[in-house]
Image (tube, rainbow, N blue to C red; front, top):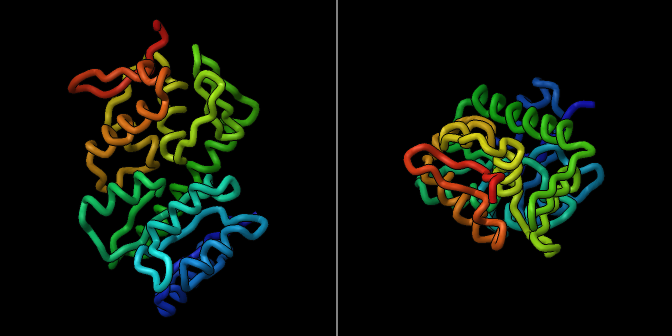
Length: 231
């Protein structure tokens, strides 16, 4: 069945262009011209397979829409590609920390955007396939892969989609060093101009949330990170 893309932007002409090109690439589309409409559309069954989300919306800022999508059990796993006229690094970092899967600056190439949509969908499909029926336990850490849930000492953690992906990438490659560039490619799906400092920021936040299990994530100075199995 074709993937459904939710387009969220208050520029009607741009929404028309995006819908035209997405449909020509075989996708189904939903559209929302405000943050409120976006949240309503995302909650419909079946949920969209990905969201193209403008940051400058007339009612609810796109950052807040992304935060609410990630806070909801029903929508937190939907890939989000942010669309924005802002190109400041801090905006990209904040967007990615809120759980966005990619960040595209206007004006953008339609061809590039289609490739990025395909990339986040491919990664999402791959994750769903590889996670079926798998659970991981390591010391106080327990991960339910299909359910995207994590516990430490039987206390459930609230991780963003990116934090969950980062954790499971490290855990499933236990004992092997993962460079920052490799994590950018494998966790974010493709390199998007995000600096390696963003990886460090996410790892720091992840360690803090893991609490007693945070020491399993080891820093190899000048190289990258590794999930330790010898503690």
